Image 1 (cartoon, one colour):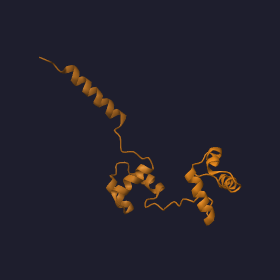
Image 2: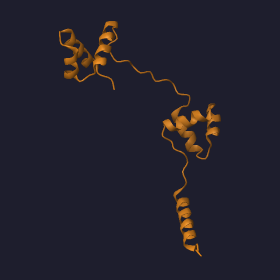
Image 3: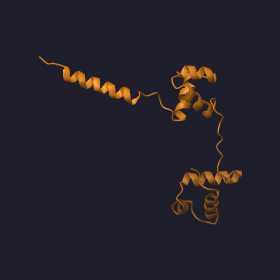
Image 4: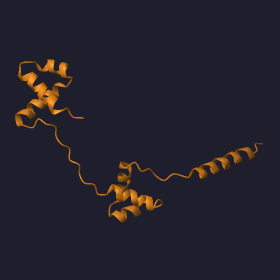
Amino acid sequence: MTYSTDLRKRVLKYVEDGGSKEDAVNIFGVCMKTIWNWIKRNKQGNLPPKIKEVRPRKIDNDRLKKCIEDNPDAYLREIAEEFDVTASAVFYACKRLRITLKKRQQITKNETKKKRNLFKRTRKYY
């Protein structure tokens, strides 16, 4: 999280009015290195926080969700062919969207457990 421009101006005004940087650290709760960076940026005229640019994604999030809903059994490589990207790009896009791998259905898990328990009970030890 970035510090507000208002806080930056107050810290710099305090230091310019004769307050020490060590006192500013204790009063405002910011790091000494941060104050030095703000002083340097103020001299350059860049005091406001930098705006982070969001780069465009290769795969459209809404289109990927729709594709997975329409084809839940599709492999990553099949989805990658549709979007004209690599399978790893689809994997990371799914990870970014918190779409997990296919899971077994609950019925199948229960049936597997029952078979395992049945096998344990019928086993004879000699």
